[in-house]
Amino acid sequence: MTTNQNLLNALLRHAVEVPDAPFLVVPGGRVWTYGDVVRLSARLADRLAASGARQGERVAVQVEKSPEAVALYLACLRLGAIYLPLNPAYRSAEVGYFLADAEPAVMVCDPARRREIGELARPGCCILTLDADGGGSLLTNAGEACGELPIAVCADDDVAAILYTSGTTGRSKGAMLTHGNLRSNAETLVDVWGMRTDDVLIHALPLYHVHGLFVALHCTMLAGARAIFLSRFDAAEVVRLLPRATILMGVPTFYSRLLGEPGLDVAACRSMRLFISGSAPLSAEIFHAFHQRTGHAILERYGMTEAGMICSNPLHGERVAGTVGYPLPGVEVRVVGDDGRQLPDGEVGSLEVRGPNVFAGYWRMPEKTAAEFRPDGFFVTGDLARRFPDGRIELVGRSKDLIISGGLNVYPKEVELALDRLEGIAESAVVGVPHPDFGEAVVAAVVRAPGGEGLTEEQVRTRLRSDLAGYKVPKRIAFVDALPRNAMGKVQKNLLRQHLARLV
Ligand code: MLC
Ligand code: AMP
Picture 1 (tube, helix red, strand yellow):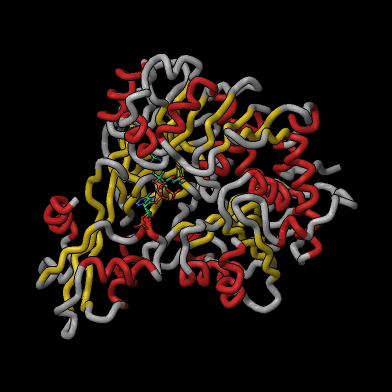
Picture 2 (spheres, rainbow, N blue to C red; picture 1 turned 90 degrees about the vertical axis):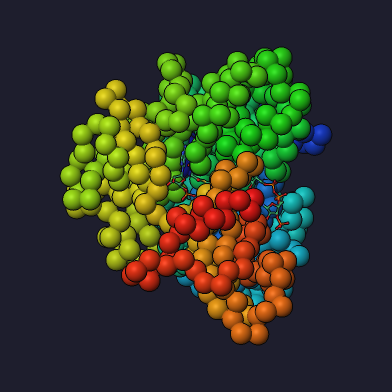
């Protein structure tokens, strides 16, 4: 007899035993018990099924963060449908690509964007709406769960979610994450971070990325813990809530902004046991300043969309600033040279990972998938690292041309293509430069085309906003006569980085 490996079974273990336990606590609002969320998700599963979402079909979701959105995710798992979350900041051109590539059976969007999305979706895709307060056609027309659809039978290697990660060529790739990937990673994290029923996690991350959706939410559910559920990160509010919490998960920008709050001190952190940071490098400066102010050593961990969490500093034992700790149990990590051979400890090379956490491949891109895996199953992360003799890993850079701004990835090529399409621009180059708030900031150098003499920085930024999500729009744009190129004609991005760093 085969058992049902649907991730939802694991996530609901606690909910079934203690349905009245609080799960999502909205400050100044409702306390959602595990039972509340499960009942709503069962209703939503009925609604999605009636709208055409079947096992293996994609359900694209571009909505604001809310408890209802959590229930929607669980509803997709119940159906065995593939959940495809999208950042609400994505503009039409960006969403259009995802819809064409993933061909979802159902799309759930904000009511305010119903018409726009309707024009992008292929015929036959059912469009439902959900707003930040739970309004919209998804819930209004969802009856009481009549059939209580059973949890779809899934194998470990069935795909549970597709998360798009931008491609270096400007084309995004859909990373297929399986039920087995997500369950094994979350179970490991609950174990290594010692998560318990009495933990209270401040959930201030967005729900459309690995960090907020899989790490924070799955760990909370598997542990049977509760989450103080915030629609977005607000440093002052988080400081106010710290005395009611035990865990915070965030990107480094959370921590630099918390340090800017006068109320952050030892007393405010009296109930806290763990501050976790990831998605981007945490500077040693922030690590030490936070330790000094609160007495807490932030636990830095490392992960990526394609592999979930890979390394973590220890719960017990020394957390070393600037390192991401040890590979998680069951996860193999190696540092290799250009020839693919493992390097001796201390030498910098390309980081590769293998384990039950590593994704099943890129959606409908077999060649791209094959190119990023070694024959022995290791996935090439695109990160550069060194290993210490005790097994600790230090990330030292990236071989992929990627900017991480406030924990959000921006591929320069995508921004360059958008810039080059604008009238009055001949060519452009986009780089990341150090930024006190976002860690890295996107900046651009632009060469005007004939007719573009009067173009201003603000005009370019405004025009870009109609094609690109706001976080991808360069914070500063410099007009230059020519891009610096080497003898081969390649743009010298290092020179540009030095030159443009002064702008922010
Ligand atoms: C918002 N803006 C940003 C930005 N976020 N600009 C650059 N980088 C960012 N990250 C811009 C908006 O476009 C807008 O500009 C202005 O800032 C205000 O928008 P906002 O929404 O009010 O911003 P704010 O609430 O301050 O958001 C900042 C933030 C947020 C850092 C709190 O970006 C955030 O929550 N980041 C976390 C992302 C995350 O979850 N990453 C995990 C990926 S998973 P304008 O000009 O448009 O008005 C992963 C794997 C792993 O990496 O290891 O975890
Ligand atoms: P994403 O594709 O959005 O999942 O981003 C994954 C990338 O974020 C990784 O490949 C790393 O480059 C980066 N990243 C995640 N965690 C850390 C960390 N703790 N330190 C440095 N970089 C990190």
